[in-house]
Image (cartoon, rainbow, N blue to C red; front, side, top):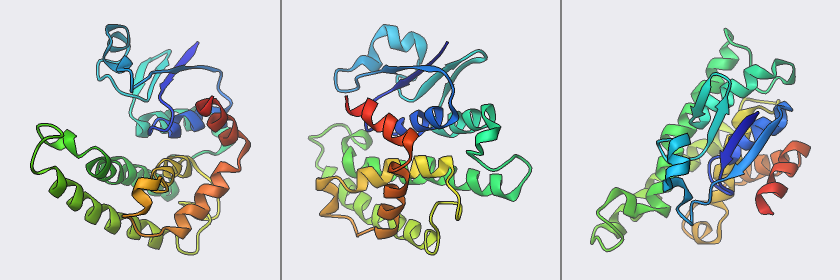
Length: 210
């Protein structure tokens, strides 16, 4: 049985959606990050990184959204969740997924969790880290808005798992505390609405809200 480890509202949402979209049988296991369950020996034995997402497979544990999204898409090729390997479409998908994982996600962290880059929340530099994070995130969100110009989805006219990953950041950007300091992102918001209207996504959001 495939087990998927997640925490509601975290970046694991992207892989959670992927599994549901693919129609793969899996057991969803919530790891409560607020309670520190990711640091407990039981979970560390599963994922030594102490992070989500994590996906147990017949070939061993998979971590990182980029890897899990590609793995899931390849297990359900008929669903066309990502373009086929060997095409420029797949390269563009990898480009977008890498951008989200390596650039967008860390920049959000600098705004919402600046203490991770310092010695702790009492550091005198925490306001500067957050301020620089807001400036960088503003630039990145503007880049995303330009990329989405004239597109319904990240790769063009068709939905892909890139959009499941984008939904994570669209959700974070519309949080009350961030809306006040970030630029409006109408194209990203419109994409998020389209993604949230998908049956598989609705099921995942309902599960994570329960």
